[in-house]
Image (tube, rainbow, N blue to C red):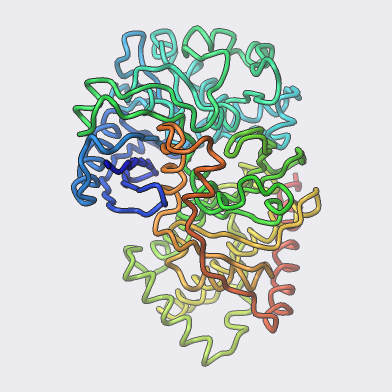
Length: 528
């Protein structure tokens, strides 16, 4: 009997990854290919969607070859991606989103902050859709990016025929279907999935985007996560090295795939799922909590209905720069350099040595506020700035290690800040499920337990994001009756780290300083 497999594709900020999985969730082969980014000016970041598709095809072919699986045995595929905005013309061709005018740069990257002013306008509108994004519009969402595009590149806007979140663009390239995922539309386009009519057209009229649906080819109804949106087209099958019998599932934003990968085992367990938080941590960090009832409050995105698991509401918080902040600290410091894996590992080793010499209060008067790229949550302030307090003239490698350590502490305290907001608004979270690049950083993994007081679970799955997307692909292929069943069957479990109770007092002090630094920064900003 022929065994069935699925393909999961994850497009991050810097590369496209593909994995081949079996129905138990085992990753049999994985491959990665880089993608290019254009930074024409400060706060602008752009991708070439054709380059992304080419990278996806290369990665899928290589992953299948590594897995040793025949093309005809891969019966489902799905895509997750960053919440980047892809703009295509009426003929499907590329249109420039760049001040350079180059058509190849047709995608505004999720981290692009060019539309801060437009995001502020959305917030000032006071529209009811804001109740489901924490009350504040972020420049990382699609509406302000679309507003900027219409105002600043009217030629592109007038030629536009298709507007996609990146995951939906990949599904379109794979099938030709104009279906959009309930995840992408709900989390980034103000679609209200819990309502009979999901779109609030008056909101788009109010912000000058009354012609959005004409330009974007957007559907009236979103497709549930894991819905079968069709077979691979002949062209896509040939380019991916798969067959036209392969079904394509409505995908998700990358962090949501990670949430499925680490919390999927609790699918259907509505009583306990609210105790668990997914922390998807790499360049930036996303935290995701799910519950059977909506828990709306300011400063955390959501609640989003059915954005990951069916019938559950999801609240999303996060930090816009975490891994990227540690990289920045290394580049910025005089004793730093290129923030590659060897540099991070060398710093981590030296921090361990310094803590043995100086004790657990290493660099205790050095404090960092990590909002170098704004505060995504719980303050929802894209204008927030980072702060370092306690600098000296020391420019040695050890001073870099101390600053790195205290920056890592601040990142963990930022998670604690989000957790506190969630738990003050209806959640009872006591367990963090961490996936992403941070699992390779021993300092961060220790701090996530000790600085928050939570149990930390590191998934046994090498690639929880690919696992989550594989669950979606398996659902679309009909290998399981629904997404919940796929998640439970394919989940991989994890290893547990308990917090060090003796460290609680020290981090309680650090957290009080952390909150005071927020207050002082706000006080400085208020001085006129």
